[in-house]
Amino acid sequence: MAKIYATGRRKASIAKVWLTPGTGNMTINGLSLDAWLGGLEAKKLRVKQPLALTKQDTSVDIVATTLGGGFGGQADALRHGISRALVAFNPALKAILKPEGMMTRDSRIVERKKPGKRKARRSRQFSKR
Image (cartoon, rainbow, N blue to C red):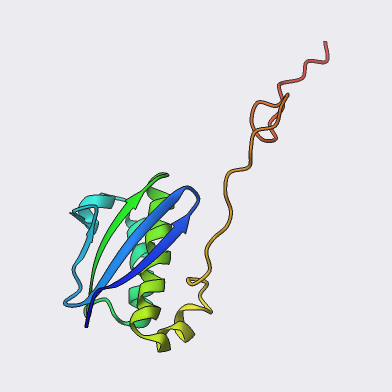
């Protein structure tokens, strides 16, 4: 079977995912998952979650590139991309992933800064006296 391509997004991050049948190898930006995320165990689990739910963690190889944002956004974008690639690989897996919320793009992004404020909603400190 050929490579399957999918894109995942979260905040300002984009993950491009290529999925092929294989033995469970995962390469992100030319590094293994452990080398890429280091000691961030919770983020590693979030990336592996779609594979664990569908029991595909030892039957597919994943090569991905991520760009934009930080590690948290990139990890969630990668999770979204892996979910979409798995459904393209086997449409029956959508019934498992959709109720868990992995097929939905998390549309929450940073609110814009407003004039007269320090951040989007944070005002300057008020001094009564």
